[in-house]
Length: 360
Figure 1 (tube, rainbow, N blue to C red):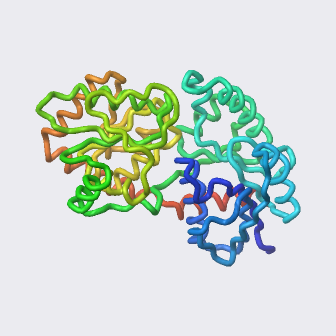
Figure 2 (figure 1 turned 90 degrees about the vertical axis):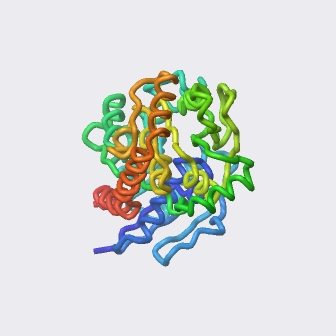
Figure 3 (figure 1 turned 120 degrees about the vertical axis):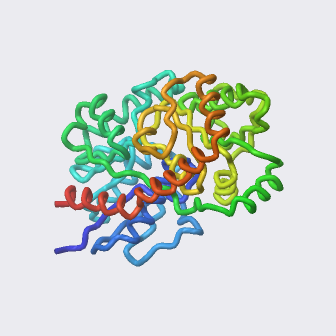
């Protein structure tokens, strides 16, 4: 049997594009730990990231371009075909030049579920390109069962060719001793005393205003501030009376935030997966999450799933947990166990099955 040749759109590997970059970096890490006779061409517009170490089955190929769309629609597929790749993997949009070898990963279809969460131009582009990419693809990869069902409900061409490969916690998020983590958060971010945490780019879909309002509704006997971390996006940027914007932080400092926060709040309106929940679990941080999209599926029984979007209900749940150390301890223990059920190696092995099906 000849060696399986795979081409991956590697532009987001080791990048900072939040969950999408985490997916591609985690997939590559998982593939390196997977057994099998295959060769992966990682094709990108840029040079190989300095921190990325690859084994002999991987080859980084840089093809610069001034146009992202031209690169994804023309340069990438033509290079993949020139390299005789039998499986060609990208996300969302997919060029017709991939022929019958195309695989697209769709992280969510929130642009169809809640179009008001997107800027008009982004919504129009996604609403046109993603269904077309699904139609062209031999296989569609979804990152949760919730995501798979939503893709098939909103894009009929996905039925019968969509498979699920779950995400996992990124390797660069690791639990830190709580005392050491607290000291670093205090020294580098100026957050002293107990605090709450929410993570995400400031987009309407992420609904971080709910976390800010809920924290502000806490009774005065709770001294907690709310650390709001992540990239600035667009929408309401108010922080309320307890919010403290800390911006985009390093993975080491983010691990310290998770490891020293009393609660992690995930108020997103919709997620195809929700990787930060697993990050909080790994670091022993109790989680309150919304019922948006796949968050309950990922959380399982390890988080308090808040069914309403009312900030006073969230504040009441927060107070209930903060007043009960045994409930917090139970959530920490459940979270640690839940996070271990997700693995990038498993993701890679399931993705390899997809590659082999497409290459056959």
